[in-house]
Length: 396
Image (cartoon, rainbow, N blue to C red; front, side):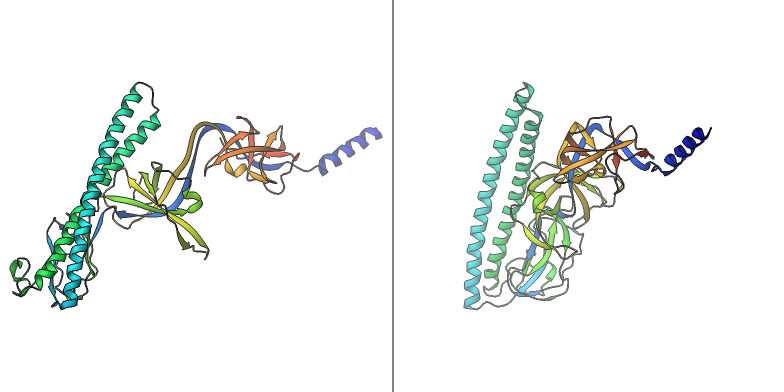
């Protein structure tokens, strides 16, 4: 009897002093989709913005337009009374005319190059479509050829806009010389806006809407001073500045998801260009960072989204289906390698794993664990190899 009592007391002491299992949250290792994105803030901007400037020094009359007003091509946006030209000013005006002529010739040549590039892209896309139909080309090659055709189409449109703008610059430069001739108005004065004096009509090079007017009031301006900014608010692009270390992973054609722009759904876009030159930017913590602008195009611009609006962009740099994945919160460092705690019969076992790409929601597992095993999330300092654990609030 005393022996049984002693054994009972010893057992009670053993189980009483034995550490209780640690409550942990676990999640299963599974197969599925892994998406890796670069998340940064960006903003929208009008793709083709035209700044109408004063062709010469003089007094600009009060501008009657307001931001948001529609304007047509060749519509007068401002009236300018030029100052008389001396010999030096006349020589400068003649030089500007010659420069404008050279600019127009270069713009016309750019249109021809863009037209030829578009024709070649269309031929390449047609050939790739035939090869894809015969199974000799992949879906990715077909998508890239179509993206190249779309990009060349936009480049041709931009080149034509630039050529029209160059032609208007040439007209404006010539009008300065005309204003110096015998006091006659270089162009027709509509409705006596200039009071019968010699006057230059500053016209819009394109159709669009007024984006910004630096100053509406009548004032003295210098040659080249901005008067009106014009563009098409419906033709928007996305500008996202990312760290240079992230920019090297981003490729033209990559998908972009825009969130928190003010709507109830994410907007789809794609990368058009990663600028080749970076710049230094000071972060909110006072750290200098090398950043690079990534330019993207919206697949469909929603109503209400305008120029200079803030967006949160997620640029996709990696995506794969049907890979072994694990929640990133289960990973911890063990030396130079990653490891996880796997629950085996109520015991935590540390295991080294090979990790590939890591996203915000899942990390790619290349070796070390198999689908179906359960790993501990947010392992604390109390979790060690061989510790008893109790699974609570399990994720499904």
